[in-house]
Length: 468
Ligand code: BGP
Image (cartoon, rainbow, N blue to C red; front, side, top):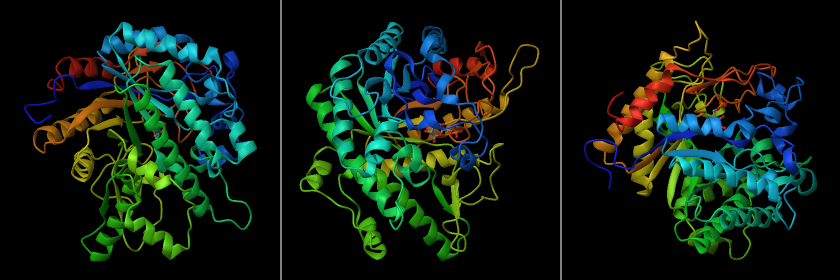
């Protein structure tokens, strides 16, 4: 148990990334194209998917593919104990349906894990982070096709076997609930004429839940030391007022989000979701054995991303807010980032308590941070705005541990090194402790530079969250 004076001994401090947003090397050494490799850069997400612009950020990222030694050395200098990264499915199975993996792709991650091990940094590996093979979309229709369960299982099993002894912490699908907002990159399935996108989505999600449970089963069979978690994009939903209808709206939205962690952690669909399916005439096909699979292989821990809280009112329920569809309506009590994300450190404590009281499983905050535009002044980046955001969120985590008894084991803040934004496709929205000289149009030397926040985080980690 973690309750006590502060962060527990052995707390996993670190940072988080995703292959498609920073590796580059998009077609190197046999890698196949992923869904994100087809998307160009544009400030507006809708335009981005319409193919506006001619620079493909994921093609070069920040070239971690070639710079990983330098980057990992910088993470070690900050004192990281954990590094969250994802494996690009298309490096291992370029099309997704092959029987044999691509050795060069497997070898690349061996090198990464060996490099991390040199510094005693524990990898936390996301198996699928917004980059499924494009081939599986073109030839199978994405996750609405049940065959993807088998392809994913083969892919995950290949990883567990290959990296046994090197990786112990795994996440199956990044922000699985993003299927609602980013279906193109999350499930790769679109409704055909006459089909309901919502039905397609829930069927695709069901396949992901089953795939996740089967991966969990395989991970445990291959190595009992493996620990598997789910990963949810989470923003607690506050009622915009004390009006009972607003409270009700907020509660329903909250329930929608927690559906995803419920299935992973409890192993069954909550009655509220089944009732919703019934009222909407949605029939999700469960094959024989699915219920047992979900029930038998629930997760070891819950992980989630937290950037902001959200608000809901009855009047506007269902209307997404600006910047990120998860954020809901504007809360008049909160300031917001340049991208309209409402900054709310206490909301992180709320989130931790919600997950803790609902599941009593260890928790990991695997994404958190402030996306901001950084300016270089006299060769330095004084990102006090980022430090203040992070400081307040670390304090909120400490309160949740010390005052509320929450079992929090890891904090990997998002984009520890500047990388491509998932939502906007830009470099300009930066989260890093380490600046990368890379611009929206792909220009820049790729040189790395330590921001003020680098030294702040180094101090925070060295003092186990006391010196903030
Ligand atoms: C999450 C994703 C990440 C990441 C982050 C920040 O949804 O898991 O991939 O990018 O959000 O979002 P953005 O990049 O849009 O600022």
